[in-house]
Image (tube, rainbow, N blue to C red; front, top):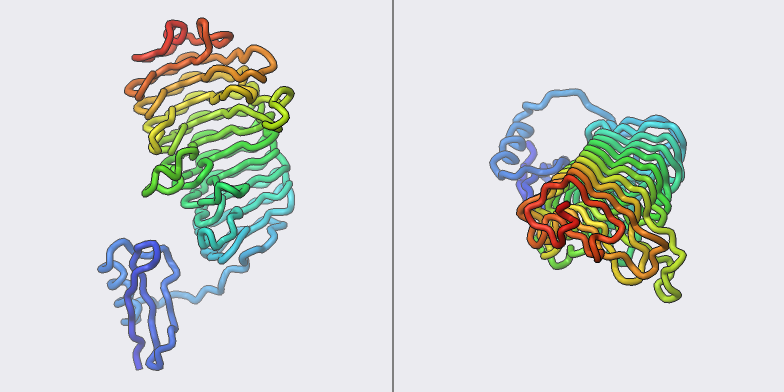
Length: 380
């Protein structure tokens, strides 16, 4: 007896199908991303039942969930994992090519861990595919000089109480290149983050959009940032050529640091010497507050210093375009940040803002094009 096709709607709201034998046993199921339109799913199912698909039979991919990757590997199919990490890279100087396929986790059920974990390795390249549904998409933990390129990381949501909550996160690692990726709808922390002692990393030419944790509930995504430099001692990193939009809070942000808030923040290494250049950071602050580019500070922690913010365009952000907050009490010396050649318009409060007085403190503002500034030194 011919198979009977059934259409159904997935948990993600897409249309899919399955085929049942005469005894009711499911003998085939669509394991793809699903179809937006019911008619499209019906058309593919109809062709399948009529025998229109007469192609080769491919064996399942050799790569499985939880596998350690120790040599050059190219995926030959999608991977769906009930928990994570899906793949753990433990060898230096290898390439993981996702082959255009998708590695999918099951949201919170995936354990709040990364889809792909680079575990204290050097010289690894991960490229060309999609990672979704984990606590983070790709995590670099330790090691150095790795490359993450042309990867889509989307819908990775961790817990505010956990270690992960980013699309791509780099922790205590140096010399990495994060380039040409599409990073969207991750959280609750950020699209891309540098955590701990990260030096000389490059975050460049990425499209970072709608990282507001839960788009339907913006109040839950207030701290979610597009690109976040947390540190402490995240020094001499370059953030360039990125397009950052729709973040819950700041588009690009360098945070203040404090190792032990109870004992006091003095002596904590700050985030120093970072370069933020030639980015477009627009329409951030979807939770109700947020700036295009911000050197964030609060009274006690050590504020960012010797940052260069140059040639960026920051329009239509909820709070500020480019902002440098007043330094905290624990700052070891003049922050001496520089903002040059930036432009901004249509931002909620000021296009250029410096909270340090008088006359912007030790910060230098020069050659910027802003419609609204909070003090004359910003518009100099």
